[in-house]
Image (cartoon, rainbow over all chains, first blue to last red; front, side):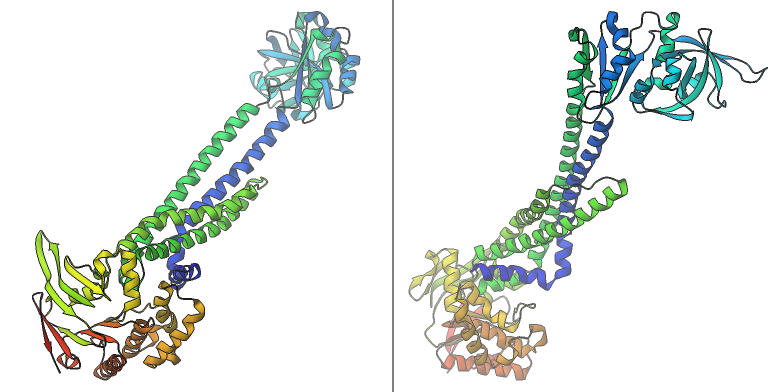
Length: 394
Length: 223
C-alpha cells in the first residue's frame, strides 16, 4: 500500500469517530501532561530552592584566628579595611563566652517579682549585627555611638525573653548580667543568620570587652556578609587584609556550599518525578492498547472484507498500527498543552518562575507517538491474525 | 479455476467435522454457477475455498494453472484481489467512507497509481448506474443501491470471477431483480458468476447448479 493510502486508511477511523479517538487518547494526554508538568515543576522548584539556598547560606564568611591576635583583628580600623574589600557588605566581631551567664530581669513596677535565668551572651558591633540580620519585634538596635561609649545596652532574643518572662513586657527593661546592669532596648524576633541570637542577650562588643569577668578568655570570630557569588574571593582576601603581618594565622572560609546536598535533593526529586511521569505514560499506553483491542474486536467484519478485497495481513497490521500511532501523537500534543497550562497555574499560584526545558516541548509529542506505536503492536497483530472466514461470518 | 478433490474439515469440541467432502469443480470463462443446499451443508465453505479465503485441508485449488497451496499468504492475497470479486449479503461497505472511497479500496491495496484510479472508479460506478451518488455515504443509500456499490467495488479490478453470497438476501423483490439482471449482464461480457443462494428463482438464472448436502457436492446442468 502506498504511504498516502496507508495514512488515509489510518486516519479514516479516528476522524469518523472523533469522540472515541479522544477518549482513547485520554490516557496518553494525562500521561504526557504529567510528564511535562513534573519536569517543569522539577525545574521550577529547583530554581526556587536554589534561590533560597544561595541568598542566605553562601553569602557569609567566618574568620577565626589564633587567640593572641583575635582581639587585634577585631579592632574597628581592621573591620573598616575588611568592609572596603570588593564583595563585602558588612563585617564585625562576634564574641560568645563559653558558658551561659546569670541574667536577672528587674521589674519596672515596684512589687513585681524578678526573674532569673542562665542565658547565653553574644557580643557584637553594628557591623556584625548587619551580618546576623535581626528583625525586631519592638525596640531599636544599639548603634555605633553606644558601641564606642561602651554603653550598657542590650538586645534580647525572643526565646531568651520567654525564659525571663519578659516577652510581653513593654520596653525598656532593666536586666543584670552577672550583677552588671543593662538597659534592654530591643526584642529580636527573627534573624537571617546565626539563629542562636534568639536564645541570647546581645550586647555591644566594646562593652563586653570592658567586662573581663563576663567574657573571660573567649576570643572573637569575625563574621562577614558578602554579595552573592563573592564568598570564595572574599574568603581568599581576608587573611591578608585583617593581619597582613602574618596572614597564615588567620583562617577565613565561607559556610559549606550545600551544592552536594542541593544536587542530591534535586536529583532525587527529578528521579521521583520522572518515575511518576513514566508510570503515567505506561497507564496511557495500557489505555490505548485496551481500547484498540476492543476496536479490533468490533471491526472484525471490516477486517474480513478488507482481506477479501486483497489486503495482506501486513497491510491490515500497518493500518491498525498507524491508527494508534496517530492517536498517540494526538494525545502527546494535547498532553503538552495540558502540562504547560497546569505548570503555569501551579507556578503562578506558588509565586515561582515557571521554567520548562525547551526539549520537553519537542520530545513530549514524540513520547505520545511512541506510546501509541507500542500500544498498537498487540492489537495490530490480532487484527492481522483475524481469520477472514470467521470475520465475515459474524 | 479448478478444484481437485478439495475438502475442508475442522475440529469442534474434539470432534472432526467435515465441512466439505472431496469435491471436483472446474469453472470456465463466463460460467454461471449456482450453489444451493440447506444450512450447514457446506455452501459457505465451498464459496470460501473458491474465493481463496480458506485453504482446503485436502486436495488442491488451481487458478490459471497455478496451485494456490504452493503460494504464501501475500501471494494468495494478491491473486485473490486481482482475480476474484466478492459480493456479500450484508454488503459490507465501510460506513464512514463515501461510495467513491469504498469502490477505491481494492485499488489502494493493489497499489494502483492514483492517476489511473479515478478513471477506473468512474467506469465501475457507471457500470452499476451510481456515478451520481459517488459522494454519498452508504447510510444514505437504499439496500439495492448499496449492493450495486458492492458490485462496483468487486468489479473495479476487472476480476474474472464474481463470487456472490446471497446477493439478494437483504433486498426487496424489485431491487433483487435489478441486481440479478446486473449479474446476468456481467456474465454476458465474460465474467464468471458464482452465486450461493437459497432461492430457486435465483438459481434458475444459472447454467450450472451445484447441490450440497452434508458437505457432498453434486453438480447438474440447469439449461
